[in-house]
Image 1: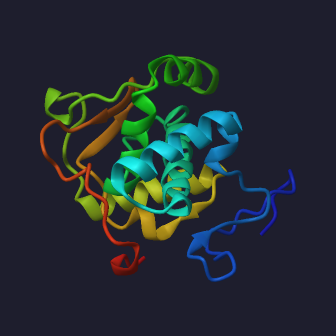
Image 2: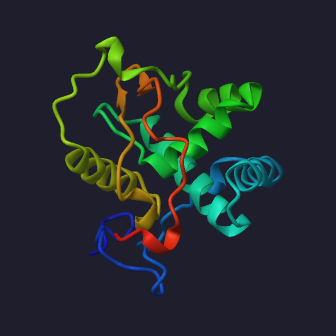
Length: 181
């Protein structure tokens, strides 16, 4: 279905068997940052998590799409464990991250423990993942479905994104071959 602006609103198109949900005119998260910064972030993920560059690029792309969605969402959203790795990596580059937040959201997108009570933990992980995937798609970004299988214990509130503290497994990568959409 195409809306008045010529943007496809159907959300179930899969891009050439890559398990990337996409529609006409969808953006990539990668487009939100300069190529040089994207490459540095991907290199770091690849090196620190011992994964291939292409897989690391997928992670970073989805983290940026998630943050781009959080920038304008009033609904609590949660990254998957794998996507959260990209967010953690971006946070290490504080100046670039702060500039990104200001440019994309007009404010800093905080990564704060969920145990602060700012966001009620009323959704199941599956509900959080589903709502986040829909929000990312509606925000105009392609969704790489295998990277969204299990959300981290994180939420995005109206004041910015938040994340659980402690060892929640969000720093562990799963083998892409074992991930099912």
